[in-house]
Image 1 (cartoon, rainbow, N blue to C red):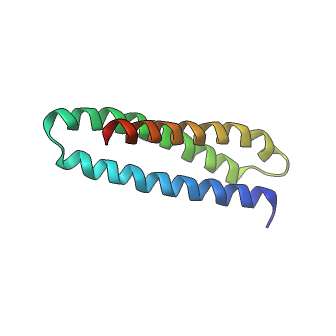
Image 2: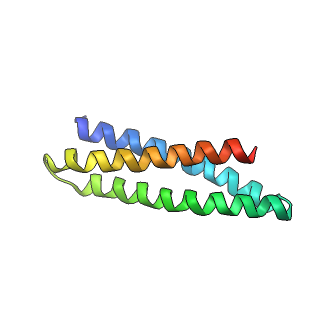
Length: 95
């Protein structure tokens, strides 16, 4: 397995885990009271934006060829880190 493939697999695994965690928050939002539901929806909106960005960056990585993936890797890492931090923040504030 090449470095590129390993990185893509690692990033996909992170995104899959975070998608599952976002799903848990979505489920909690459905049963939350009115005030809590508003907070959940605010955080979920932000998370979904960051999730879409990270997924798009992963798609760019998959589509990249040769050494171009190294240039895309930095942006993908930043997008994944932003999603991870937003999720961490949301979980700490909503629990």
